[in-house]
Amino acid sequence: MKHLIFVILLMGIISCEKKDDNHLDIKAGIGGNIQYGIGDCMPQIDESKIIYNNYNGILYFILKSEIEQNHNFEQLKDKSIKTSVKNGNFAIELPIGTYLIIPNDVYLYSDYNTVTIKENTVVKKSLKFWKCTSY
Image (cartoon, rainbow, N blue to C red; front, side, top):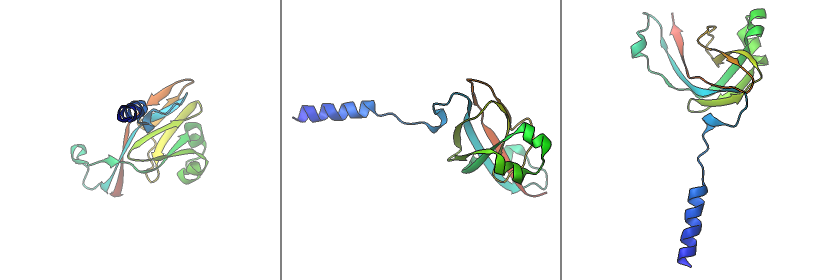
């Protein structure tokens, strides 16, 4: 009987999988890591001294075509696709298109945080965002 219990426990342990939120079964979209920092921007920041932490919060995916028509980020965020990020990791299925990726309180419109989603392609991208508390 002891051997049977041991074999059942062993089979249970072997069959267990760790679900990695960064590798969800998505057909077209993006996954990666977001790091975030906040602090003074005066004087100019020495990039090597910035401390980033894994981001926890909402991440927005705004269609680039929408930004070209409307520059009000708050309105754009209301209409955008969003996902919750925990400990920096995210993965989301997105329709084909070009998106601007921004966390909740950083407004950066750059090629750096732009991604193009193509059919049957999952993009891996890690980003760092810095929020200035003063200029």
